[in-house]
Amino acid sequence: MPAILSPGPGDATHMEATPSGNLMFTISGGRAYKTFPLSVSRNNLSISLQLLFQRTGNLRDLGEAISIKRRVLEITPEGHANMPVWLNSLGISLDSLFKRTGDLRDLTETISTYRSSAVYTSGSPRVRLTGAQNWARLLNLSYPPPSAILAAFDTAIYLITLTATLKQTLQNRYTQLQDSSGIPLQAASAALTLKRVYKALEWLEQGRCLVWGQLNNLRTPLDDLRESNAQLAANITQHLPDSGPVIVINIDTRRCDAIALLPGRDQPLHIPLPDFSLELCNQYRVGLTARLKSFHLRYRGESGLLASEDVDDGRGIRPVHLRGNNGETVMRTILRGLWEKLVTPILQRLELLKVDQSLDTTLPRIWWCPTGPLSFLPIHAAGIYGKTVSESVMDYAILSYIPTVAALADRIKNRQSIDKERTGVVMVSQPKVDGAASIPGTTTEVRSVYGVVKAVGMRAEKFEETEITAAGCLACHGSQNAKDPLQSRFLFHDGSLELGTIVQRSLKNADLAFLSACQTSTGVDDQIPDEAVHLAAGMLAAGYRRVVATMWSIGDRDAPAVATDFYQYLLDHRSSDMEGGLEGRFSANALHHATKQLRLRLDDNSDQSLLTWIPYVHFGY
Image 1 (cartoon, rainbow, N blue to C red):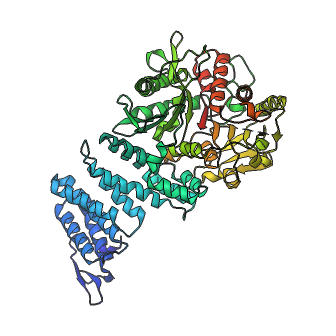
Image 2: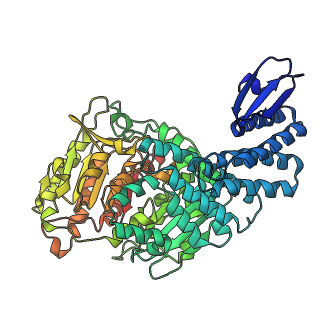
Image 3: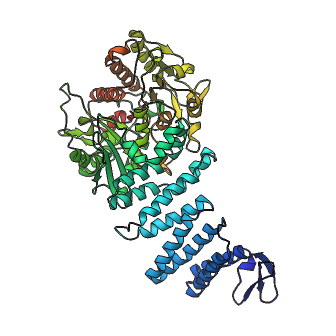
């Protein structure tokens, strides 16, 4: 702050308007004076007084700051781009006054001021979003909040979309979104408190995965875009799968809820989850992260193998024996908590029954759409894994994840038959890359899959021909870029393949991607978990309908068997018209089968075994 605006003790400050419209400040003693544009200089002076109040607590300083800020608003021309800045500045001072006095009239004026900033028709969307956030925050002080909070969050969600426009680079868009991360979840929480389930769903769809949504819209016909913008939530519910429910789980500091979208039902079903909380979710995430670190599970490779304890080849892992409640290991405690407090209430409300898998019974599907830090937890493995009692969500349904409901609805709405001439499989094995751990199992993995595919007379193509094939199997290292997701890439000996390159290709027949690499479904930026900054979501945005990915690094010894079981299941369950080809329609079933076979081979519920099969996840339709 310039010294001219920071008079010391005993100094007197005089200000007056000059004929030219500028403001002259004169400090007693004739030490200095300067002229500034009237509104800017007055606002700066008011900020100095605000800071002085924060240091001394003298209400007189705060009162002078408020008076000056009101005068700034009076002399600023209507429509001026700085108006939201001045309004936010006044809002800060009024907010301080309310906190000091507790007078509801001060609160009312503060809310009105922030609202004026948010809805102003000119000015920076970023500045107006700050006003909208504070507008909603103050209305949210009461519980339940007033219905006016709906307008506040409506404005905030709209402004979020303006702050991350296509005019900016991807990195800048993600930087902007970090400051507003969590607003859609707060908005949905308020809407659910007010029994506005559709509105909650609308906000979660509009305010999350914005960048991937922008990429998808670039590939969408204009007529479809106009239609989707007109009735977002209504159109989504018109294109739902008929084989099971879609479950959106919203989590916020105040509450946790599920929104179930059911086939044949027009209205979404609201399922409160009072026993689960954001605090508990974060505890589980911290516990899971610590457990992964204790097993060195980050990158697929020799240093991260889940080796048997009787193997002494320098690659074995000595588990750290952390214990949860009731003598359970940390992993089993987390999975039990997810089962009892999150998943079971949902299954009970949906009246889904446990299926005897020894019978030839088709399991229903469930599509999970978690939000916030829930995106980092293995909901698909929630269950009780004891020696005498064992039950999990996998006994009730075949499970998939989606970044948004719109991503799934788009696949269903635009589904089309795959050209039989383009139903080959792209397979890539890259066991050694400079600067990365060796993963020799990738060679075995691709050779095994190749043998399964060639046994039925299917084509196997080079990766460069990915645009003409329906399925791809990548057994290699993956690298995710949080700042620019389109630079996330798969690593090969002679270079890398960036996600941006895949997005630019014509992938009309891109059906299934099997990403047998590390952490391809877990975001690497916990500041924006709802942007799904990971390769799996990126492959969906690139045009793939289904993606098999991993939440953390996978055992190099077990990966070949999982891939072989997966592709063998797909080939065994092909429709008659796909003779000589492959489609991913049953990819979720195939992964369910492959992980079940892996569990049978492991034959125990130790943390080591759980961490071996749990990372495999299915995304998409």
